[in-house]
Amino acid sequence: MERTLIKETTQKIGETVLLKGWIDTKRDHGKIAFIDLRDRTGIVQVFAQGSQVEGLHAEDVIYITGTVQARPEKLINPKLETGTVEVVAEKVELVSKAAELPFDMSKEDIEAELPIQLDYRSLVLRHKKIKSIFKVQQVIIDSFREALKAKDFLEFQAPSIISSVPEGGAEVFKVKYFDYETYLSQSPQLYKSLLVGAFERVFSVNKIFRAEPSVTSRHLTEATSLDAEFGFIDSYQDVLDMQEYVVRYIFRQVEEKCAAELKLFNATLPNLADKIPMIKLREAQEIIFKRTGRDCRNEKDLSPEDEREICKWSAETHGSDLIFISHFLSDKKPFYVYPDPDEPEFAYSVDLLGRGVEWSSGGQRLNDYQTILEHVKKWGLKEEDIELYLQSFRYGVPPLAGFALGAERMTMQILGLKNIREATLFPRDMERVDIRLSTVQPKEKTKQQ
Ligand code: AMO
Image (cartoon, rainbow, N blue to C red; front, top):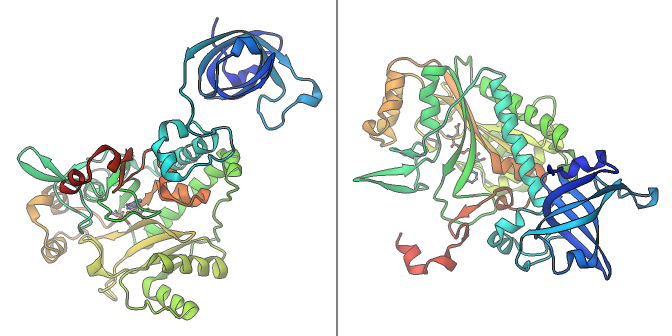
């Protein structure tokens, strides 16, 4: 018999069907039992004789042949999509036996600390609420793609092994590459910029690798970056507008396609005013000083506390949970940023903050070859390490700009998750690659590497 998917059962009243799935929960009542059977399309209640399901428990994979019956009015379960029917089991076949579960997966929230949940990631990812995080993330990433394709951007696959460190800093993983030293990509920055010379408008969805030396609730060592870059801009305002268009598109799609998932988390999309407000770094610091008395006015960046405060200000005064902060210090930013000609110590660089956390960075890039060379020298980079990038600009590249949104950060902030690891299928940090490193490698060995 051909398999029937669980969501199709409501259309098959009176028919005999073959269902294949996992036991989500089992309720024993002596001679009879109820099983909530789960497949990729949903859950349906199965009624069985106790003897048919003896010894079975949650996560066992079973095939059930049975008849679909309409439930009497008073037994309809409005919480289930298939709540108007149940399947009366005729034959139950055990296909794959599951081990005893380490915790109860039938609760609305798994009652185990996050590190434990991450140790059992393969199992935990089967939980309805956890799965829904990745449905939302998929819609975010799909919508990023759709929004940019609609604007004629070409998607490219960014390399992961790179020969230079575009963003600077020590947060980079070295890779022994035969006899040479290379790095895991911190960012596809140089590739997306040089591709503007070929395709004018490009984007990529790719992994970035950061050797983050601390364990925080918003940093991963391997993150998903949604990168875009485009040429022929008139001013750096264009990059704000493009980003705003993309973010609004993503929000609309998430709202339309993920109503059930948002409800599970009691989440609402961030408020957006008619236009996302934009202020300069120094203005933001002045506002923070006035509001809190905390003097950060000479700092090169906003601290996490500052980010939360300026987002609060934005929500209160502009009705926007998102805010752009521009004009970071040129010499604290990577070599490719475009200094504002009116105040060159500050750059046309822009971060997007949302609900207290940075969602993206971006800005206008240098496109004049000689100026790029000057910056390369000043920033202490080796020309030969970024030869392909330089080559593109040697042969003419229009004024350009771009941005990169962190997919996990967006997911986390939209759903109100406390820790970025929850928004990552397989989070990596300095203590974990799949499972805790300390449990698989002696500490000494981990240290040496
Ligand atoms: P930046 O380094 O700010 O900019 O990274 C862009 C966005 O990527 C996300 N992100 C991270 N998410 C989780 N863990 C991390 N360790 C991590 N690092 C970054 C954040 C961040 O805002 N080349 C520039 C982008 C550009 O100018 O186009 C860049 O890499 O959401």
